[in-house]
Length: 380
Ligand code: AOF
Ligand code: ZN
Figure 1: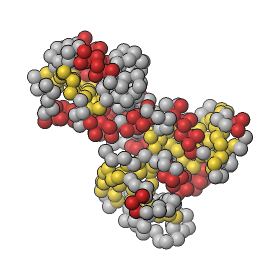
Figure 2: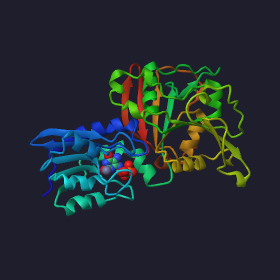
Figure 3: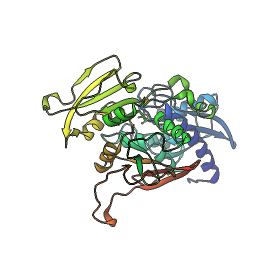
């Protein structure tokens, strides 16, 4: 008989917390955490740091000195059943004779997808599923979307005034939200595999679009495995290819994919390495712009799981209008910029309130005198 208790939820919560450390480095693998409990005490814990490194269960087994006979393993994702970069965790749990495995969510990876549970159950291990499942689905939202389809998960960030403007009429936009909001933006960047921006943002702001780990708090840095720290790929959509590579900071560090448009079908997806760090990619032009779908599909082939869009009104809105926006982080300050300011969005008109584009509030956080509204396209 399966039973889920308050205790199971408590230990799963610990496993989920551990898993969240993996968000910074586990790419392209999902963030997974594991806690092993015997006689009510945690005897081992671990999380998956990086693809190619041991999975969460193996880290926790090691932490417990493999002395786990009769113990319960709490894992935030179904233990794997396949020989990938590492051997199957489900077999290891069987071999180590754990008595019970409590899991938050199944692994939709076609290579696993229920087979992990099967291995455990066939070996006589009690398996309890769906414990704090929604939290795991949320934590893994990028991996789950990317592994089951052709596109990465897209997070759109917007920083705006209370009257939904991103710049004054004269173009001034620094700074609408406070520095703590900007620190949160850095955190979202650090959890993203790739940042997409547009030519207009590069010209207007000359951003670096990188992660400044040196400014992270000690508390935050303690969660990140320094060995596997990374910078997201920077993708610039510049249909006409007008940017001067020597002029803008974005080209001066990290990997950059400079996406230009072409009308010539024989050149679609042609890549050219321009410098050691900058590659040009040619994609089709749609309505006068580089085709977002092609770009996302291409990033999917690179195993990019999570994309963050940091761009101006047009590009931001294009992701929403073309249904490629999975979540919105809206940072809102109390400033009013006025009706001639730049609108944050330009969304296609809805035909009715019953049938309009809808996002769901996931979290609302006060950040000093500003606020962060985190909306997702599906409800968690
Ligand atoms: C687990 N525990 O901690 C993780 C799992 O090629 P590999 O060996 O790195 O396997 C990657 C796949 O394993 C990944 O796509 C996902 O399905 C699963 N991730 N499974 O048992 C873990 N990170
Ligand atoms: Zn595994």
